[in-house]
Image (cartoon, rainbow, N blue to C red; front, top):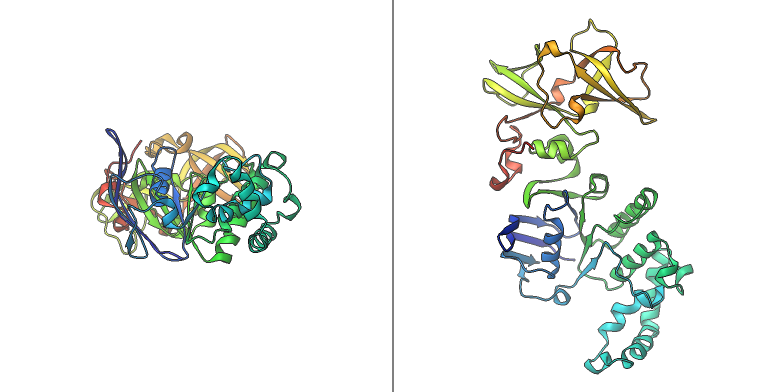
Length: 398
């Protein structure tokens, strides 16, 4: 196992800087997910850890040893690619055995013609065959051992790629969006498979994805990147309940957090004329603040006389166990929704089904104690500014 430390990693491609002063510590056995939209720098960062790409500045440290000048082979990491990267002319068994067989190659074994013979001889040796059989059984690949990749489904091919990484017994596993080519059912199955492998091996996993469901269900730690800048590094639960800024609040959650502008006077926030309790442990300055509430921390009722925010139901999305209700606030409230709120609606998640219909008048009630408060200019969470780097403390609207 290996502890990973990244110190002030930056990466430029010409005049374009894709990673800005990234630092993180990943303990032995952690499952770290690098999460972000396309172009956020997450795959580039993974390649820097692997040694496939050089950092423009900063240090990559494995177990207190600086490895910047070490080759990928010397770093003893296994890399699982999005595209499987299997050898189409080899069987499943031969693909899995390939890394161990290659470790026994001498220089002259790479001569065309000799390489194929050497690979078959080494791959069929008793000790390698036993290791292949063990890994194949673990990933339920026994019945496909003699097939070639072209005869496998996408999920089966990805399991072969995982088996080929696992058989090397590396100190660390690096996975670059390995499930993005699979359908929803296979993605769910393979998520469970990878989590099981992580627990079984006890090794450090660093996993890249743009899918928040993968991140939230698999990770022990998540780093959210935006334009190469770390927005937050925390556990999945901390990120969901206490987002470091408005970007994280909108990126995590489906629907994402509702963001609304509240006026503050004497430490009390007022939203659409509704005065809310002062937040516990947080002093709000007079002016305006961005208030955030997850959809499950709101309720909606057809009782238009109860305290809350008056509005009109515009969208109903029945998800079976839950229902999503989109409400347009009454214009008379002069309630300013944050500009990225989906369809300019307040979204409520309700357990079960609703009797409300589109066009109904309603009242939205708030669970104010669950609210997050963000700086109106920078977007930083006023209660958790320590979770975001100085480089990330930027206006994050848009």
